[in-house]
Length: 333
Image 1 (cartoon, rainbow, N blue to C red):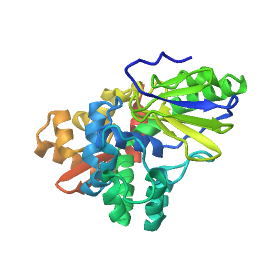
Image 2: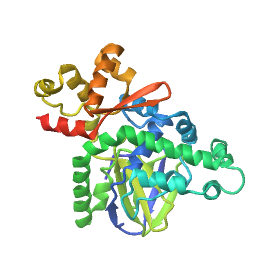
Image 3: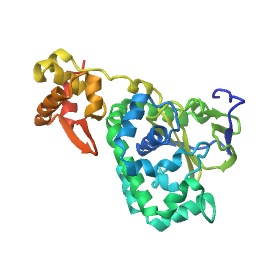
């Protein structure tokens, strides 16, 4: 059993007809969606402020415009197009999700909005998407791509946590005790004798029948939960993977002395600071170094193919290359 529901919260009830079959999907695009909801749409679910700022700064105006409908307080219902490829049968990559959005016909989005909200004009916060569906699809796809560019290094570091979660779900499934597993996913999910209670501003009751449950661990704030009930065969639940809080802290740093001997102390610190892509201004503040000095050292690291630079509007973004990741791994204790 999970924690008791607080009387001041609204809860949706998901009722099972029998003990459900449970599987797990490692689909990073739902991590991206959770970060978009937290960092761009303002649905605060525990994402650390550093990552919230980094994600928000990375996304361009078109992407910010596209995710605006998610920012309406108390409205959690959204069209299926947010998850163009469902994770119920296979693991879904971010790139395949982006490709599915790019291939979605504008008329399909209009139909999706009608199925979600009924005939006629959709709610006010979705009308811009209905009026310019192709524009919205492109903007949302660009937001996914830009957020993934920021969070992919974090996802790579999380592989051991995800492997442990696969094992944990597998053990609970084999032992036939999924109710014990459900109660440990999130404080916003409570396992009951009848099914699940999920904290939700738009509370309701749903009979799931014999549909299976697909669990999708994410790297998101500790209170982030996303549920989809639309597929007739399965329900998927995205939740924060256990131990994710360790990833928000600085990872194990390389042996600075050894790395400094190779690239110099300032450049060693600079590489270590780039746990996620950062703008030049963010990096200068983090490193406490003058912009002119930072440019000089970035030029040297770029010449060594250890960082990339990308101009986006007025900002220049810096990121470590795969070659840099491999170099740092050599010197980790």
